[in-house]
Image (cartoon, rainbow, N blue to C red; front, side, top):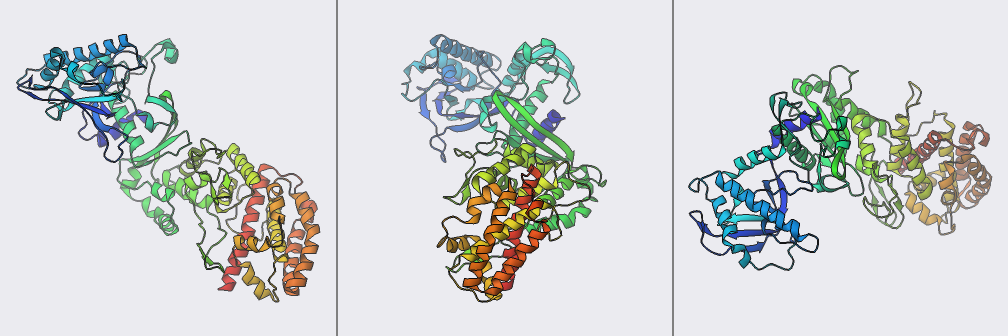
Length: 624
């Protein structure tokens, strides 16, 4: 099915690209002045550079077929060692001579198939090599044997001549054909079968590939079924073999693809049989209003014939030297009238519902120094959630970027998060454990990590039926780890208020103080405290909450005394009531886990985040 989808994509997006052509970068051009099929002057070798990227050459779509270690010239455009017969310190002179001779012979065969009156270009090229005019070209010092060089006649590229595409198609059939006829497993028709796939995907499109890569490659007996090399047991006609690689290259280079530095997978998606949207733009850049509109429009979408006919295709690939590894291939309905059938739209709805989580700031906040802090986000992109699996940088206040050193981010982080978004899969246990590992090492919990924790809890395999994971503070939740996280947040807040220099005389004044950002409160706190309760214990609290909360409960008496002395009885009583209420809900400290499981650590983080978000929300509203 994958090969069929790729050939269909090629048919739809190929345009006017001839068969067995692909893009390649060229750094040099040889221009030959000619008239009537004869050379009229010395050829000129000149460098060609991309206008926007001067360090790169110019990309042309030229005749090309797969070659490995064998000598196999391309038509009218190839490496310097083939076209000009020049080697360098990385090549062997005997092989360079062989490559150049093969290119010249291919040019002669081309000229022999067409009279000069119909197409004089191949005859000009034959005369170029027969006359010895190439010997008069001075070799630039910077030219390399494997640089691309394209031939031109009177400024017109030779590979665009009228007979070039037809001759090349015949030539590839001779090289790549198996000599057998049969039914193609892709198109289902009978015809000449390919011996190997004639094209490759550029290495730049396949993470992990060091060379241009092939999707199907059985060039050694050990790789093939029944120890048979090539495509003997994979019957594909030459036309479909070319279309597969054209389609794959088009898919991986389209705007509907994603790859990030440091990740080992390239992702691509497209929709067939309809012009309807696949909603992936909404997943990548979620807008709350648009998400709400998508939820509201879903019932109508299930009634539209065009959307019901559509198929959503999802492809994830990686590379190994010159081979493409298909990590994931999905072909599902875009939408379905049957709610029990898996479809793309339902998966996207589940994605938004399962990771939506209250942010620390639900409204914008202005600090005392005049700075404005924007409201947080309830919904996040897969890229942002994958980023939070890396190391938090205290210096920049951001996660280490993709591809940077020492990020400690899994190579398949983005792929796994997108699988959860597109395929409605659970978050892998290894990734959940890695997130906890990063929280413990960084001591940092924010909106992104809390949302990823909620996604993991919502989709954990052993979640009891009929239960849901709260997206904001749930006063009725009796999960002890969730309550422990809330209690830890309340203890942090009590110590913070205990060390304010500013005197507060009423609960309403304290509410205004609480509406300040955590960053500003921490700044105020550090005027008198070198290391806060949260700084000391946040890294360990989610894993071993009982001893940490025991210590916090002992210290809370001193904190309340300081609050009472410096900021008034009302604020002290308010803190004491909150501490006591959560303490009793935990059945005392004895009800808190001594050592938490992975799920309990996630509940702790979610409870901690929800408690902080609730306090910020409540008091920001009160201040307004």
